[in-house]
Length: 246
Ligand code: ADP
Ligand code: MG
Image (cartoon, rainbow, N blue to C red; front, side):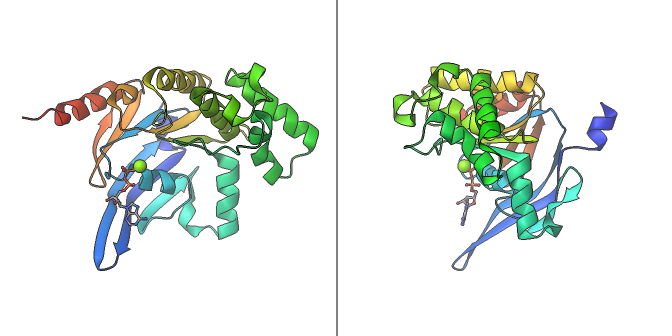
């Protein structure tokens, strides 16, 4: 455990992200520091506007901090060129979004193959990997369906398969159950639990305490700062306590 703790997959050190809108300055992240070990399943919770998506964009190398250091596997992301950064993003990070972001005219299989097309993987190999990823999310019998022929939960499963097909080190999900009813959301959380069991590292952004409570660990943001970091159940409870008017 000590060895893992001392070399986290992700490490954030005093990260800030400042947005300037006209004359207004928004400190969306204000000194965020924590690490994520390989194989951890971490929830990031907090009310709307607390900085969750901003943090997610930084973790996913879609955005860079205004100050502070972000390391993936010990590599300082700040020092990388644009092409190195997109390479890191494509190889190491799988994204899952609230709105699925699937190509509507493409089959599940073609959607899942897409990241491998960008990587120049040969057709047959691509197809095999995509089939395997779809089987892993329980969609063996839906490979040739298009998104509009699938339920919301199935669409999100396709998106999870697409995120996993390139065998990234990290799975990042921003409110992946936000567009699903609670039963379907539950189904997706069970899928994440399964992926966690299989050793995947997952960072899940959610504003739903019920879901955060399922994660071994949760970090709570408030006004761009970490105000709690501990077992998911406990950190989720803080949210419920806060939500109850005095
Ligand atoms: P959350 O995902 O927790 O709802 P965000 O990270 O989206 O929070 O936003 C955090 C804060 O930063 C909010 O006050 C939001 O208005 C502001 N913000 C987010 N993105 C931008 C942007 N592109 N430009 C200006 N302000 C932004
Ligand atoms: Mg958000």
